[in-house]
Length: 167
Image 1 (tube, helix red, strand yellow):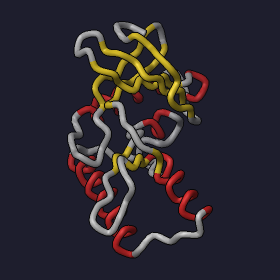
Image 2 (image 1 turned 30 degrees about the vertical axis):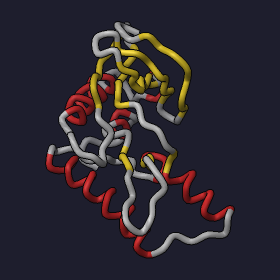
Image 3 (image 1 turned 180 degrees about the horizontal axis):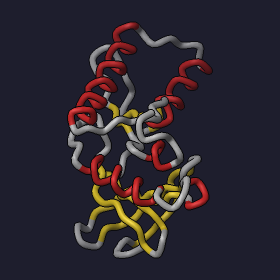
Image 4 (image 1 turned 180 degrees about the vertical axis):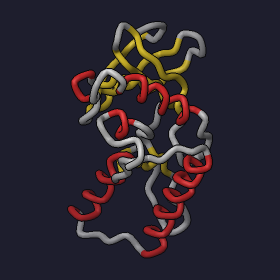
Protein backbone atom coordinates (compact mmCIF):
# COMPACT_ATOMS: atom_id res chain seq x y z
CA UNK A 1 0.00 0.00 0.00
CA UNK A 2 1.83 3.07 -1.19
CA UNK A 3 5.40 2.69 0.02
CA UNK A 4 4.52 0.15 2.73
CA UNK A 5 5.15 -3.57 2.32
CA UNK A 6 2.26 -5.38 3.98
CA UNK A 7 2.92 -8.54 5.96
CA UNK A 8 0.72 -10.67 8.19
CA UNK A 9 -2.63 -9.64 9.60
CA UNK A 10 -2.28 -8.93 13.32
CA UNK A 11 -5.76 -7.73 14.25
CA UNK A 12 -9.29 -7.16 13.07
CA UNK A 13 -12.01 -4.95 14.46
CA UNK A 14 -15.25 -3.26 13.61
CA UNK A 15 -13.57 -0.44 11.69
CA UNK A 16 -10.84 -2.28 9.83
CA UNK A 17 -7.90 -4.64 9.67
CA UNK A 18 -4.41 -4.14 11.09
CA UNK A 19 -1.35 -5.59 9.39
CA UNK A 20 2.30 -5.74 10.25
CA UNK A 21 3.98 -3.70 7.55
CA UNK A 22 7.44 -2.45 6.79
CA UNK A 23 8.25 1.18 6.16
CA UNK A 24 11.04 1.13 3.55
CA UNK A 25 12.16 4.66 4.44
CA UNK A 26 12.77 4.00 8.15
CA UNK A 27 13.32 0.23 7.77
CA UNK A 28 11.07 -0.40 10.76
CA UNK A 29 7.96 -2.46 11.20
CA UNK A 30 4.76 -0.54 11.77
CA UNK A 31 1.14 -1.43 12.40
CA UNK A 32 -0.80 -0.44 9.28
CA UNK A 33 -4.55 -0.07 9.80
CA UNK A 34 -6.80 -0.17 6.75
CA UNK A 35 -10.18 1.36 7.45
CA UNK A 36 -13.18 -0.41 5.96
CA UNK A 37 -14.84 1.95 3.50
CA UNK A 38 -18.28 0.46 4.27
CA UNK A 39 -17.88 1.57 7.91
CA UNK A 40 -17.32 5.20 7.06
CA UNK A 41 -20.35 7.46 7.20
CA UNK A 42 -20.53 9.42 3.96
CA UNK A 43 -18.06 10.87 1.52
CA UNK A 44 -16.61 13.33 4.05
CA UNK A 45 -15.71 10.54 6.47
CA UNK A 46 -12.35 9.83 4.84
CA UNK A 47 -11.45 13.51 5.11
CA UNK A 48 -12.48 13.50 8.78
CA UNK A 49 -10.46 10.35 9.40
CA UNK A 50 -7.37 11.90 7.82
CA UNK A 51 -7.89 15.14 9.77
CA UNK A 52 -8.25 13.24 13.06
CA UNK A 53 -5.21 11.12 12.19
CA UNK A 54 -3.16 14.25 11.62
CA UNK A 55 -4.20 15.55 15.05
CA UNK A 56 -3.42 12.20 16.69
CA UNK A 57 -0.01 12.21 14.99
CA UNK A 58 0.95 15.18 17.17
CA UNK A 59 0.27 13.36 20.45
CA UNK A 60 3.55 12.14 21.94
CA UNK A 61 3.11 10.48 25.30
CA UNK A 62 4.25 7.15 26.77
CA UNK A 63 0.62 6.08 27.22
CA UNK A 64 -0.58 6.86 23.69
CA UNK A 65 0.31 4.84 20.60
CA UNK A 66 2.45 6.88 18.23
CA UNK A 67 0.74 7.57 14.90
CA UNK A 68 3.34 7.94 12.14
CA UNK A 69 1.37 8.43 8.96
CA UNK A 70 -2.20 8.87 7.83
CA UNK A 71 -3.57 9.09 4.33
CA UNK A 72 -5.49 7.59 1.49
CA UNK A 73 -4.38 5.49 -1.45
CA UNK A 74 -6.91 4.95 -4.26
CA UNK A 75 -9.78 5.80 -1.92
CA UNK A 76 -8.55 3.42 0.79
CA UNK A 77 -7.89 5.26 4.06
CA UNK A 78 -5.03 4.04 6.23
CA UNK A 79 -2.87 4.96 9.14
CA UNK A 80 0.41 3.64 10.42
CA UNK A 81 1.32 3.40 14.08
CA UNK A 82 4.08 2.09 16.25
CA UNK A 83 4.17 -1.70 16.48
CA UNK A 84 3.21 -2.85 19.97
CA UNK A 85 3.65 -6.11 21.79
CA UNK A 86 1.24 -7.22 24.47
CA UNK A 87 -2.48 -7.74 24.71
CA UNK A 88 -5.58 -5.71 25.35
CA UNK A 89 -6.80 -4.68 28.77
CA UNK A 90 -9.96 -6.68 27.94
CA UNK A 91 -7.94 -9.88 27.40
CA UNK A 92 -6.08 -9.32 30.69
CA UNK A 93 -9.36 -8.74 32.57
CA UNK A 94 -10.86 -11.91 31.08
CA UNK A 95 -7.76 -13.90 32.05
CA UNK A 96 -8.01 -12.56 35.60
CA UNK A 97 -11.65 -13.64 35.78
CA UNK A 98 -10.98 -17.11 34.33
CA UNK A 99 -8.25 -17.66 36.91
CA UNK A 100 -10.43 -16.37 39.72
CA UNK A 101 -7.94 -13.59 40.50
CA UNK A 102 -8.69 -10.04 41.48
CA UNK A 103 -6.46 -7.07 40.76
CA UNK A 104 -5.33 -5.21 43.84
CA UNK A 105 -6.54 -1.68 44.41
CA UNK A 106 -2.99 -0.43 43.70
CA UNK A 107 -2.86 -2.29 40.37
CA UNK A 108 -6.28 -0.93 39.33
CA UNK A 109 -5.20 2.58 40.37
CA UNK A 110 -2.03 2.29 38.26
CA UNK A 111 -4.06 1.28 35.20
CA UNK A 112 -6.49 4.15 35.70
CA UNK A 113 -3.68 6.66 36.31
CA UNK A 114 -1.85 5.67 33.11
CA UNK A 115 -5.04 5.85 31.04
CA UNK A 116 -5.89 9.28 32.46
CA UNK A 117 -2.37 10.56 31.77
CA UNK A 118 -2.63 9.43 28.14
CA UNK A 119 -6.05 11.03 27.78
CA UNK A 120 -4.77 14.27 29.33
CA UNK A 121 -1.97 14.39 26.73
CA UNK A 122 -4.51 13.88 23.95
CA UNK A 123 -6.84 16.53 25.36
CA UNK A 124 -3.92 18.97 25.56
CA UNK A 125 -3.62 18.53 21.76
CA UNK A 126 -7.38 19.03 21.28
CA UNK A 127 -8.08 15.34 20.60
CA UNK A 128 -10.96 13.48 22.26
CA UNK A 129 -10.91 9.70 22.03
CA UNK A 130 -14.67 8.99 21.65
CA UNK A 131 -14.29 5.19 21.79
CA UNK A 132 -12.37 4.41 24.96
CA UNK A 133 -12.85 0.78 25.98
CA UNK A 134 -10.63 -2.06 27.24
CA UNK A 135 -10.08 -3.29 23.65
CA UNK A 136 -8.44 0.05 22.80
CA UNK A 137 -5.91 -0.17 25.62
CA UNK A 138 -2.85 -2.38 25.10
CA UNK A 139 -0.89 -3.59 28.11
CA UNK A 140 2.84 -3.68 27.41
CA UNK A 141 3.45 -5.95 30.39
CA UNK A 142 1.69 -7.44 33.38
CA UNK A 143 0.17 -4.63 35.47
CA UNK A 144 1.08 -4.75 39.14
CA UNK A 145 1.15 -2.68 42.32
CA UNK A 146 4.17 -0.69 41.08
CA UNK A 147 3.31 0.02 37.42
CA UNK A 148 0.92 -0.53 34.55
CA UNK A 149 2.68 0.12 31.25
CA UNK A 150 0.01 0.64 28.62
CA UNK A 151 -0.88 2.48 25.41
CA UNK A 152 -4.22 3.88 24.28
CA UNK A 153 -5.16 3.12 20.65
CA UNK A 154 -7.65 4.32 18.02
CA UNK A 155 -7.94 8.06 18.49
CA UNK A 156 -10.32 9.74 16.07
CA UNK A 157 -11.70 6.67 14.37
CA UNK A 158 -15.06 6.74 16.15
CA UNK A 159 -15.91 10.16 14.73
CA UNK A 160 -15.17 9.00 11.17
CA UNK A 161 -17.51 6.06 11.75
CA UNK A 162 -20.50 8.34 12.06
CA UNK A 163 -20.18 10.05 15.45
CA UNK A 164 -21.20 13.65 15.62
CA UNK A 165 -18.73 16.49 15.40
CA UNK A 166 -19.81 17.75 18.82
CA UNK A 167 -20.97 14.60 20.60
